Length: 298
Image (cartoon, rainbow, N blue to C red; front, side):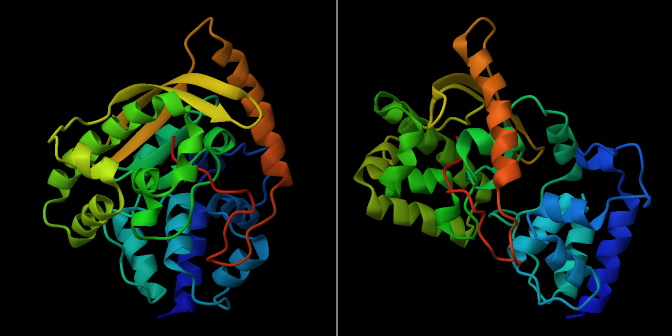
């Protein structure tokens, strides 16, 4: 572990990024060539003081979740991400899970989707990155690892996770989740974490077990969703997917059909999202949870 070198490395990566590359407005005056420390902290969900100490090499050992968030904020490549993890004395994460690396190209594409809710997830339905509108629509994704990081897993094991959809739509979403998960399991091969996740779902949910035994398989590429929002009510949106080359990650974005009430609801959502973000408390430390209640993937 070399936190001094980690701090120097983070600063060198911060200096090379233009604000526009990270989806930020550069403003008229800037004293640094790249991002400011407060901008990196905002993008990573950390406090400015925490990130400043980390960059100076005087902070505590960062968690895997914080390192993954910094890798996304600084648009690190796979090799750079792995290097940062090793400097921090953390094992390099697997290619799935909530700390999986998101390709900078996918993040750059997500940055361009400012006017629509968008997010990056794994093929096991673990949220990796959300833009502001996605968080306003769906709530902040939970931190942590293990099966509970998967919205599909929580769908069958936590009844509260289903409140995001009207009850009449639950059977449809259950079928879609199971058929999509079967395709993901085949893609992951003999991965032990994926195997344990499916075994746990079969034990804990009779509904999942029955649907799994049908043998249905279908990758989710596009779907229509009715999302229950606490302020806007039911919002009917199209959900589209853009998959990575290996199929293990997806960029999801939600759009309203022209002439429908959802067009006005999304416009209002943009206002709600800004208000919520301005009121949100800063995250203190590497493993802190967001202050807003966690909801789900969508």
